[in-house]
Image (cartoon, rainbow, N blue to C red; front, side):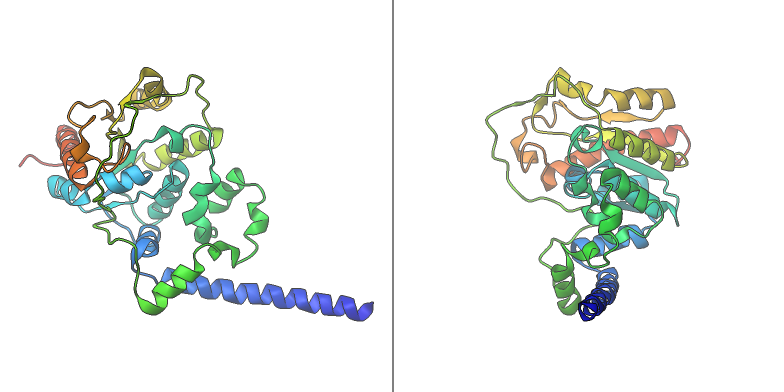
Amino acid sequence: MKRIIIRSVLLLGLIIIGDFIVGHALGYITERIKTGGQGRDNYICNECKDDILVFGSSRALHHYDMRILTDSLGMTGYNCGADGCGILTSYARLKMIRERHLPKIIILDLVTGYDLLKGDNVQQLAWLKNRYDREGMAELFYDVDPISKYKMLSSCYRYNSSFIKSLFVYLTGYTVEEDNVMGYIPSHAKMRPPQKKIEKGAKDIQYDSIKLKYMDRFFQLSEKSHLYIVQSPIWYECDSAKAKEAQIIKDRCKREGIPFINFTNHPKFMFTDSLFADGKHMNANGAAEFTKELAKIIKKREREIGHIQEE
């Protein structure tokens, strides 16, 4: 019996040591990747010092052509959007950037499902597991998933969904992911019109307390920058119930003098197949047209408040 206990303790010790060594090796590899999605994430979390930053979900990632924004406003910029993510990822990325840099302009592309309403928040932690040791991240993980403090005891767990890809990219330098342009990833897909034409909102709006908490913190982190909240175009027409989902943010923006720019139901974009990849995502042509319109609005306001000079 004593021998079994000793062997068990030794085995446990070897597992813990192995987890530590392998986990830290994967961390070393991951942090040195410069290409693809991981390279983009490394730049955002560790290096980004750009003037204009865009945050949000896949709609942020594919809708904001940073070449147009930077050329129009005469500043540097980077698109920090992430597929399938929302305010939790946006907050975390902005917090890490603010450790070293104060951006001049912050744009949050608002998607109520990812940023305000009840839903699956765990998926938003996917890009953050390897950042768990950064300031404020442990609290975020615990708010979303209370047992995460036990999961994160494993160094390997932080890389369990990405280590094969990261190792391959590190060893070969090859990635199948699309190259980005200042973080912006254009879509070249062609629209196939869906059967429905109206995007309906929920009759009973249920806000997510965790998302609201980190939305508040995102606003706080943005206080010394010029914050713009934007709802970028969708192909559908939004009904009044859908519009009400964002009312809590509209009211806050009004109180605090923050621009809320709404492109939903915009006649230039709605039902225009040539500008969309699908019902909710614009293609490269649509992104260019939308970004031009947005740049005009932001440039006008920045001139009015003396942030940029007249040409």
